[in-house]
Image 1 (cartoon, one colour):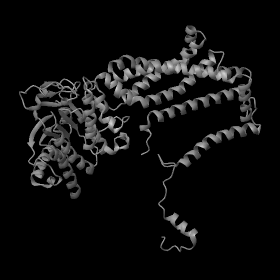
Image 2 (cartoon, rainbow over the protein chains, first blue to last red):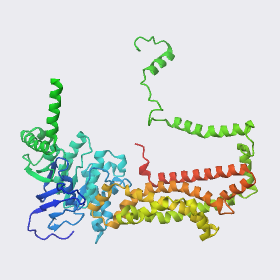
Image 3 (tube, rainbow over the protein chains, first blue to last red):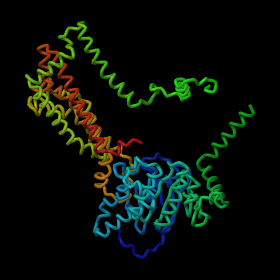
Image 4 (tube, chains in turn brown, green):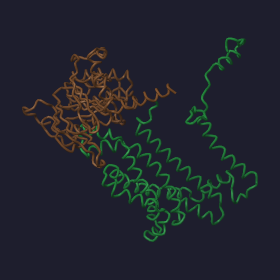
Length: 288
Length: 286
């Protein structure tokens, strides 16, 4: 990791007039992303939410360097993003753990990579080992350090994936619907865990979800996106105390923001049209 | 129902309890379940019934023993073959040929399959060609192989190679392609280089599937061994079977075929054992 000189901008990541057209897309297809402007502050927790096809995952993958943008620029830590890198670790929805490695070996995976092995002193190795233990404790899985992923529940597997991503101390943690495959109860536990991790690790998090509750509960700002072409509709600062608690989901500011966001998503996803159609059908049925 | 039943005596109590148990799902349902005992009962049935039918047919005298010798005659022949006619030498040379052809095939197919699975340009370059050659019958290459290699060991190994290599390449490539994208991308976002992704992710992740590919292609190697020995050889189990046909020694033909089956089964079991040993994480009971 190069030493960071005093920065011109305080932003951790800066996206300017970014556009993306998938190669091979038919002529006339709306752009996957168009004119995206977004600045993410250091240590911020930003959630991206929107109807399917709005490009939220594509935007995250561009930040990760796993997709290329076709116009505009993306800058992380003052450097243009040209490909994936250890400073931008990503947590996926599932199937990303290495089933042949134990929980501990998964967490330490990045230690095997050349990026982390250059000029390494023995104290560094010790520190890394200590960090792996600390992360294991942080996610509450010290007891299963020697188990294999297939022996863990889905929620536990995602906790390991988060610890593994944090091991290399990334500047930004990118999360692509990481709790999308979990049941509702596990998901709530994961929410409080990731908030705790965000406080402890002081890392910047960009989190993609289709769940509006999740977006509001976790995010300091919620970025609402719209499809065809994929673009930012609006950015909402979340009017909740810094320290979130489950009960806040029933508070007035939470419910108002949720109603506001859902209204837009229902329109932009075509759901409103579908609901109107259903109304018509049921009215016809009652009339006949 | 149990309220009205008069429970008298232990037998009827047991009966009442049994009738109160929810009905067990039928083992004949689609993807139904078998207990371990049931599994082995069916397996034993599947092995024993054909054997009994065979023994009964030959004992009945309906079929001329020249065409179908009984189990005891075949077993006797295998014994004399072992003691007098050097069964071990025939088996050894056949096993050697299979292993040599198979090893050569694997040594080339593994890296090529890995490259096809990992890199799109290599896939475009080699996969259509491999697919094309795969459909050419390996047996049709025998005359050509005999022209090129004569009838010594290299000819047999070449035929086994032709029969297994192209299939193996395609299967290994598929094994590598089936590595979940998220595993690769997670490594990329942890800073892994291309070389590290191949070594630490693709190869490790595909290994169990590749071992299964090897197990399956080993079976094909035996098929092509017999083909090679039938036409281009003067030793080995396949040759012994062919020679026996000329002298109407059906007991030798039966013995040879059964022996090849047994060796194949043993090798298959060895691969399965290796799979459990090498990849314990795939064999946990949940």
